[in-house]
Image (cartoon, rainbow, N blue to C red; front, top):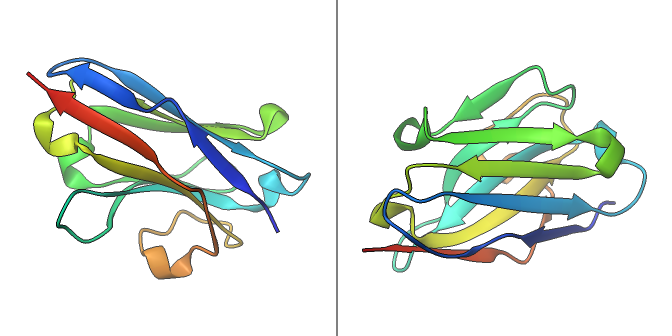
Amino acid sequence: QVQLVESGGGSVQIGGSLRLSCAASGRTFSTYGMGWFRRAPGKEREFVASISRSGDTTNYENTVKGRFTISRDTAKNTQYLQMNSLKPEDTAVYYCAATPLSWAPISHTLYTNWGQGTQVTVSS
């Protein structure tokens, strides 16, 4: 099992940037594929980005492509989500997730471990 703790959320103006971090406990981080999901008020949870166990494969939701970058640092047991050119529609609680699968799935049903979430608010 792996425990996940997100950080880095906050309030930012339109066009600003934030970097979310997800620290994983234990020595098994390198065996998990990782992902980021978000839930906006009144909406369903949605996929944002994912990265394979090796880091070689990434997937992005269409509206964040070119603005968000997912990465992982195995030595630090941490994954990141760099978010640039933020828009009001990016406002949501962002969740870090881990899957025992080696690849980078986009379905939340394939993730077994979740963080508590971190709030991101984008306003003018």
